[in-house]
View 1 (cartoon, protein in one colour):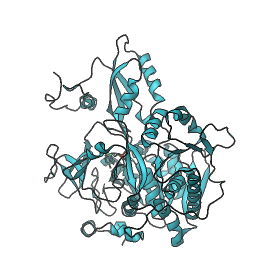
View 2 (cartoon, rainbow, N blue to C red):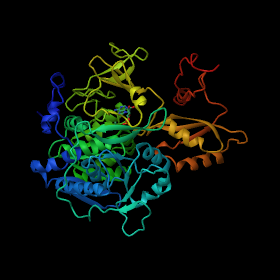
View 3 (cartoon, rainbow, N blue to C red):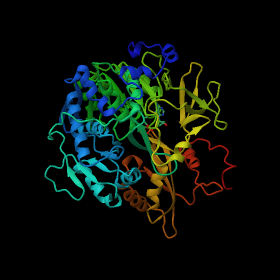
View 4 (cartoon, rainbow, N blue to C red):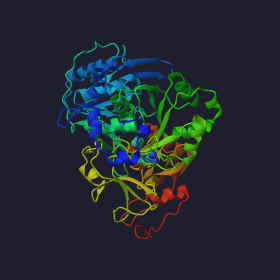
Length: 568
Ligand code: WT7
């Protein structure tokens, strides 16, 4: 196969089958397939034992690096440790850590045992953590000293959680169910018999937020690697000598599909910077590590744009060869700006936790229309459906629901314990993404917005339900609605509307008090930036809160005709 940038879209699409990826990975249908093994042992077998797999740095300037052989041995070591604890295949093992090497390598180790890896964002508060560990019936959790207090607070409510593994315990005292494990000091296990998982064996469980109910566990399988491998090669254009940087945290799907599985199944060297946003340190990192391929997100790009071009000129960013973005609409200004500032445009990629891999994108070599997400990846059949009939709209420029024909390798196989929720995502044989777009005469997709009340803040989906539940726990709160409010950097932030119980009156002190109370329960992303006290909330005749009305007001958009659903 030629390099991605030389692919002819029409030709490749016409002749496409996923067996292209199966062959490149030497996978034969019906045989065992294991992501942990594919990303480490297989790469070594191809003669890359000494190649660097991971170059890691944190904001304090600590650094560590690992070859593919280290990856193989250390994931074996973790796998052996997990097995020795008595964890069985298909049991859920959570990774609750900052972006430290143990997180990346632990992910592979867990998968080698046949257990299911459940990554959770380390900034989650105990409430967010509890909901997800309880739902998954998680058997063990890997964490760091700095986060263990959150687990201690909720462990009594988690009878299934048998082991709390602390990767940097040192000499600090451990409590019930806790055990220390130090990856870099452990005796390295040369031979570990990888559990023979098959295409449909469960691999990763990612929690994602919807409009209704608690977050849903999106259930991936080992076969997902087929499309994660190929999209990394063709969309991110990963080549043998690349130094790849993915900004995403593996608590979210971008950080696993394209922060672990995609690059390592391609045998690519990746760099990780465990620190928050800072333009100076990011540019310094790119310059120092000679990053060639960079996968980022619109919020980060907007922050970089705010810092201007002068700071760009002070760094040598000439190593950058290919840039891609995901998570939110990529504004045309950002594409134009990056072309001016870095000499390369950002290529938009659209996908979801549920799709597991990029499904609509600007492939390298394809002309970019700034503001468009691009076209369906070869092998993905996409369309937009009429909002009421759910039939494909065969006209250009008309807004419809983004829909995909089920059946690509990394599509989730279900939501954990929630069959009804999963079934509700399908209409007329199409999978509905929950987003709206239009398609132009050249087949390019133009994103228009979400089709539900989910809030997208800085590329992270936040479900209103979780925030509202936390608010309702406050004694003063009678009812609440969480909606998106526009924000120049994060695109959207959370705003909460609250009605109070009798005996309480609105005040700044009360707002602060409520904020402080829920801050500990929610992830920082889900925290409302503002609480507005109101006398009543807009409701349907049957009493359901209509968040859309509040959202439209925040965005100064017309609400449309509500006469059929609303109270008078
Ligand atoms: C939702 C999925 C998949 C990685 C990150 C998020 C929005 C994603 C784009 C894009 C406009 C986008 C959609 C989508 N989204 N990429 N390129 N342009 N919107 O995964 O948390 O499952 O969120 O993010 O609304 O449905 P996720």
